[in-house]
Image (cartoon, rainbow, N blue to C red; front, side, top):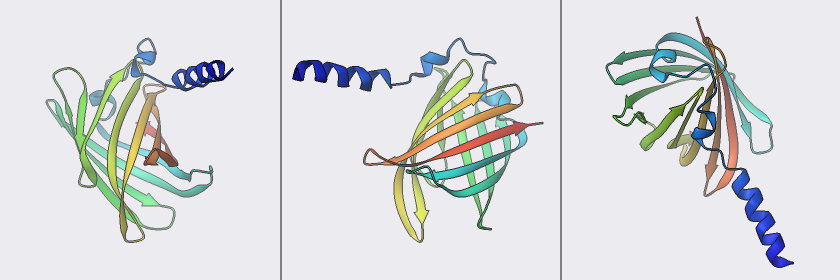
Length: 172
């Protein structure tokens, strides 16, 4: 009986794994340097691990590309009145994958696209009430139309889910 339960649990765990390859046939095709190019606005929220919305935000984005290197400036306006800025440098690699850096990212973000999806992972140095925590992000973006993209990022530390960020991008 233990063997059956073990097989069942392993089956459930492996069936929950999502691969970027699962989206290869999905349309419209996301070309990151085409969609994230120029100015746009996005709206989002942060939910804690229990699903309670803790903060909402609007982010104004401006992205420029010089060959394979993009500079993405994000200006956040948070529901508590604070304003923050993050500037990403995103580089498309020879193999079609992407590598990104930002001042508050520990090391590099790494990601890839397939079909309408972009998946990347990174560790962010997140300031919470004056204390900095290293938090892992598992970040998925899905192009819904030529003008709308949705983003879901799950935050964790030591494998424990801390919460998630949901964002909807709107391109003119």
